[in-house]
Length: 195
Image 1: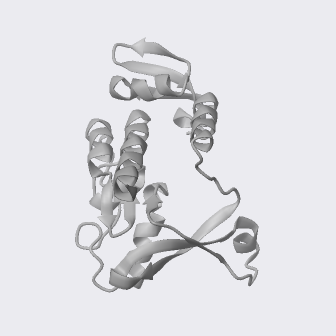
Image 2: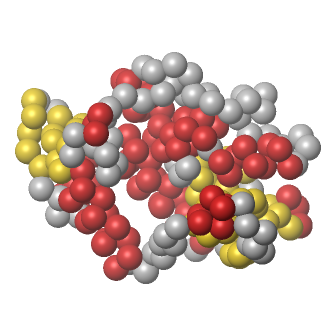
Image 3: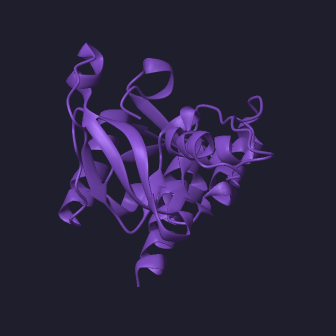
């Protein structure tokens, strides 16, 4: 979202997601009936501030490398390494983080889902084990981004474009509301699973 729509510092959000802007105090104005425009940098900044205030932890400059899987083929953590280590191809041991749940929000690449498909024979992710969204169809893609947000593998929730890639839904257009609503749904699923 930092880059906004087509690298302009603005995002467009449909009516269904306007409440998220209001919840985080993100200034916005109506562009046309049912669509609102907000500053992309303010939006990301306030979302990050709200998440950290709610005790979410963000790690800067890290790359996802692998998943940790234990009994019953359940994901129990992730393996990360520092971005500069990967960029320089240094042989530095990675860090392992134990988790109760992982949310794959890695966008079009669906990196966590793809890692599982590579490493676990017969894993049930995606349509016939194939990941990647269908061609762009903004209206349908926006709706299906939210519909596709789910626990797709034991211990793994998919959100945003990773959800579309994992369920072969169409690619979305330049509207950001579907991603915001998908993130909210992923958080609610995670909270339900952790209770």
